[in-house]
Length: 294
Image 1 (cartoon, rainbow, N blue to C red):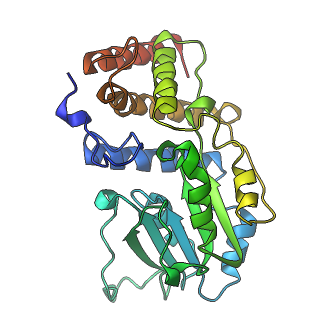
Image 2 (cartoon, one colour):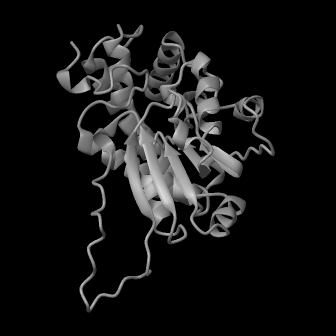
């Protein structure tokens, strides 16, 4: 029987990781950001030409759509131009960080501010599948997205891309970082890993995900009227051993919430209960520790 802790707190979406303890999910997002995404991209939060574009503007505006806990946006606030306006959007406000005090609390006299002015940052509840308010359209210099593939059905990709494109000013940029189950594999072969992967892929197809996406995303950008579209592929297999180990750790954290969604939706051939989920978790942990599976 599915335990109550496996229930999603965003039941009206196919996104399958909003379940279990909120603090654990916040920690997972922070871990992935600082230990996988940032080091994998060489410490860059934005491609150099995009960051240079922001730095050339007197008051740049950045949108982070599907912001989750806001960890990417918060990191950007530490290096963005001082007068930047940073806005995070998500349909789920539970993970939003506390809002900074307004007006800013002045530092004590013995601790001068590192910068005379700090970027502003706010978080707004909004579903990317809904059109953004008129006053927000064509008002951002950069629109950033990370890891939206788990939340989109096949027919929804073009809707999301069109809504994002509508936010960008002329000359602005859309930066989309993503991956999907199809591109996450393990070596040496692991029976536990393959059981998780197969059930997850089959479940994704059953609930309407496109198993190929985000491959082909640049074509959807072009169809939405965006130009100068470029694609860069980052692979943890080409990264150093630390990033590979961190990626293995991150995958292990995905097993319980993703398979809880499978169980909740009726199960798979060999995964019917949370006891089966625990069996796979333990098998994967054993394979990592004893056989060096990554």
